[in-house]
Picture 1 (cartoon, rainbow, N blue to C red):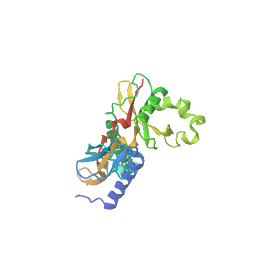
Picture 2: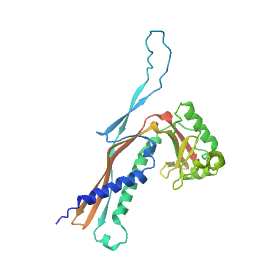
Picture 3: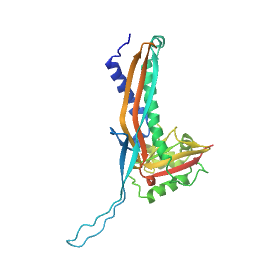
Length: 272
C-alpha cells in the first residue's frame, strides 16, 4: 500500500533547500547578470556597444549614436540531485536525515550553478600574461590595466575569483592583506574569505578549472557573464513501498553564457 507524503513536509523541505541554495549553495550567482523565470529552452541576453556624443547645429537634428546591438543566446539545461531515505534508518540514527539531504541537495545544485558560470569563463581568451608564473602583483596590475583600457566600469561590480593557492599567495602581499595599505574595513570578512581590493571583490573558489599545473582564475564585470534560470529549485518527496524508503529529488533548469569577452580577463596561474 502506498503512503501519501504530507504536503506540509514537502513544502517545508522545498523551502529549506531553496533557502540553503540561496545562502550557501552558489558563490558565483550573485556576481553575474541573472534572469529568472525564463520561458522556453533558451534565454536571450542583450549586448549593447558604446555610444558617442557629438554636437549639433542650432535647430538641427540631434545626432544618432548608432549604438551596436547584439544578442547572446543562453541555452537552459535540466539538472537533478536526489537520494533515498530509508524509513527505518531514521529511527537508528541520531541525526536529522532530512536536514542532511537539504544541505546536500542545495550544495549539489549550487556547485552545478557555479560550474555553468566557470565553464563560460573558461571560454574567454582575454589573457593577462600567461600561465608560466604564479598570481604575481605584476599579473594583477596587467589585468587591472586591461580592464581600464577596455572602459570596463569601475562601479563596484567587478569580481575576481581565484584558487586557494592564489589566495594564499595574495595574503603574503602587504598591499592586499595589510591594514596599513587597504584599511581595516577591506580585510577578509569575518566568517568568509572575501575582501575588497582595487575596487574589486576577491574570492577564493574550489571549483576553478586546473589544466596540468595551471589554474584558471578570472577578473570580470558582473554584466560580462549571464546566468538564466528557467525553473527555480523544485523538490519532490515520494514514498516507495517496495523499498520502504522515501526518494527525495531536487531539480532545476539553468544555463550560463559569456556576454562580453572584453569584460573578462583570464588570469592563468602556475600552481605546483
